[in-house]
Image 1 (cartoon, helix red, strand yellow):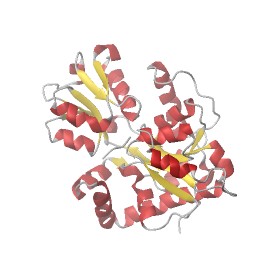
Image 2 (tube, helix red, strand yellow; image 1 turned 30 degrees about the vertical axis):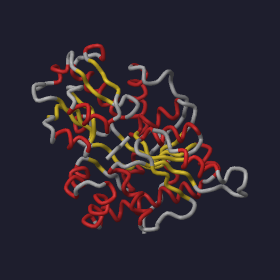
Image 3 (tube, rainbow, N blue to C red; image 1 turned 180 degrees about the vertical axis):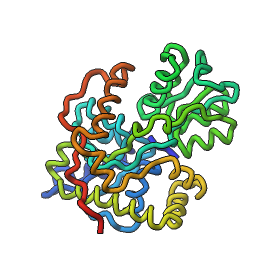
Image 4 (cartoon, rainbow, N blue to C red; image 1 turned 30 degrees about the horizontal axis):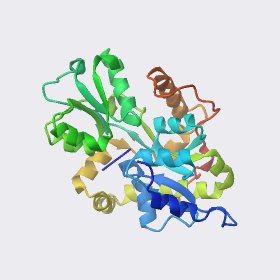
Amino acid sequence: MYRRHFLQLATAAALAACVGGCTRPGPLRTGIHPWIGYEPLYLAEEFGWLSDSVRLLKGRAASDSIGGLVSGQLDAAALTLDESLRVHAAGVPVRAVAVTNISAGADVLLARPDITALAGLRGRRVAAELGGVSGILLFSVLERAGLSREDLSIIDLPAHEHLQAWRAGDIDASVNYHPEASRLEAEGAVCLFDSRQLPETIFDVLVVTDSAIRRQPNAVAHLVSAHFRGLQHLVRHMHDSVYRVATRQRVSPEMVRQSLARVMLPELSANHRYLAHNGRLESVAKKLENMMLREGLLSGGLDYQHLSEPGFLPRSLS
């Protein structure tokens, strides 16, 4: 399973087919990749709850969606908050229209059994996908441990390649996420730190470009509504949903249950609180921006008044 490769050429060709030949806007092209917090949208598609105004374009990792937004091949995507800031920094203004999940133990730092404390990372080889949320967790860990990036050897590696590197003996620690992390634990990795120690910090959100919001507001509203309809099914029909997710992601039902136990899935009222202007989401975004600037993950400050856009949240669910 991959949480976080650009879109395949075939996908790009399909997107381009309508350019210049359509008299009205095409569907809202929405990037998505396998991650437990995005499952409500997969369920919405499976049950036929997405109208023709929204199209899910499925990638393997967040880099697919980031690349698609930056290149203009996507109008919206499911990303972590820090990934959304990267898109904004690349010159594509986006707004968060829904919070899909908050990590509560899903993101972890795993290490060889002989490393028993964070200070033991000094001089060791640590794999992290610096272009994604793993970089945020890593630098948060270093800050807590009183270490700098110069104190260890950081290997920038996509999360799904960590297991192979671990087996080859090329890394001593991995910044990863469940259920991918479960595969490393099965190989003897032990957890030194997880996102429960960073409460309400690692957010996943649905983001939409400013231009798509202006051009296709009804489709944006439908996308958000479909997410909450899928979430409602996930919560009310957990047994059915777990087996659907397990089948789609080719993992065991128990791994799906473990993944669900490590995230918070905010319902509608919580979303209204998180997305309020100058609310929690924007407060965390500012802290992330400062950290990313300090660690060289952003080249300059971002120019936006409000990152969150609560106006597309439905008032209630039927």
